Length: 269
Length: 345
Image (tube, rainbow over all chains, first blue to last red; front, side, top):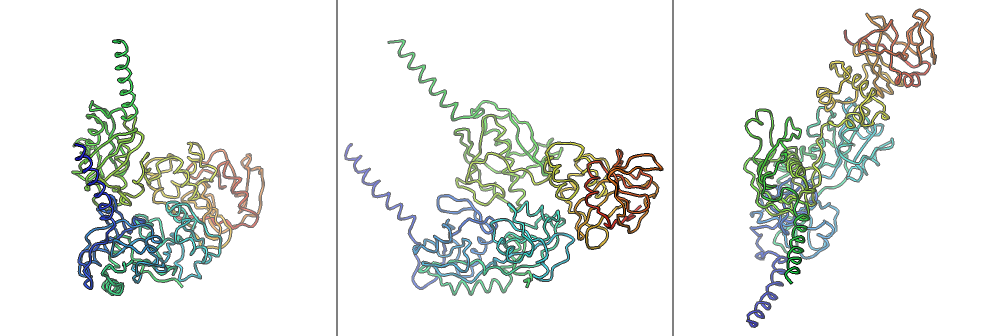
């Protein structure tokens, strides 16, 4: 009896580290050939871009702009997404050399520094979208906006643009709801909204808001992290992203998941 | 010896009962539980009474949706038909519901938010339940249901977007310029009624001063009023059709006031300016005091008056409420343009 118990303890001790290793092991990839089954990392930081159910590290029922993009990209690269896994913040994700995914979408800015991954060209602009109040003359450029009361949500990507372009003291509001109220009631002449949130901002409120007049160049965009040694080359990903942009797939995805395609808006200069 | 055993058994029983009381809220047992389940009527949460075996029964009743009679009354559910419960546990007054993937189907943000609201409201109505943890297929939903962070225990449903609370309505009326920000109290009163009346006049609604569904619906779509004329600087517009006065700065309407002008067209239309101001003015022809008077043409002034009905009633002057007239008096300084517009009959 005691021997049996001892054997079980030994077996359990052997099994534990094996299970731990299994979680962190990079999926086997044949050297030279691109993998046909991809593991895609998701940050789950922005509900418009990606959402899902986190079960352990696995993300099931994943959906969103970046999730669809990952699926299409995988097909264009000759494979398919085998599963989605949750990855940590972009900073830690890119600082780490060991990746158990081949592609990662985690709100990664184009200017990020990386150790264990290469970065693609941007697939989504991080420019700031301008939505004016009803009744305001449509601004033709940044000069027209300078005399207006510009507003943004405190702490989001548009705050810096407001500070940069506002002649009057800008209004920074605590939430998108407050920003909406401020624009519809005329307390603000224009709302500056991050590109990925602009569609949601105007959705269902077109009757109380003026037009989406354009975008202010603010950043370079979000990029895909391509794990080094994962069997995929960033150049191949770039090539496919360029095709997706050219054939309108990226624009269609943006309109479906974000409500509008920010890349199609005119740039205000 | 026998007594000490009895005491020990009784102690164990007490401990077990106490533990159950801590871990399980009322209704967790399989006995019949009467509680409300929450559906939607015109997009707003609406309760329907149910009696079911315990909390699982109540959740199943929610997932089943409104019955035929309730559907005929307009009740709807945002929860997809056929959503199944995978697991339901109750611990420390928190109900953990694990639902099948079907609960996440669809992409309409309003519906996704509403279905979690229905679940949370239903479970929070069960006596003793203090929180809800939602799981889908055994995992934690992240970003799937707008307005809810389901990584945490949910204590309250997200309030509806529409301005249903009085304070919300007052905040919106103030933000649109129909009342002073100091009027936002959350309490009903004369100031709110007058603001509602001004809003009804501006929006072409029935002039009742009553905050009804028509007003809240119109408020949900309302934007800040725009002036009739396009002129720079500080000025006053009096709209004889709508029976409101607008304080305008650089073509932005700062305030909208409920007024009563001259009956049968006795207030002349045209472009005037304030040429005389009297804190207390005596009307010789009508032998009455006119506080806070700003004259803009002949003997016609904006002034306070005890009676300001929703229709033209004066001898030609522009009557204002006692609370509003001092504000207009301060705004309409000497020389301020006053445009009287007969915008419609």
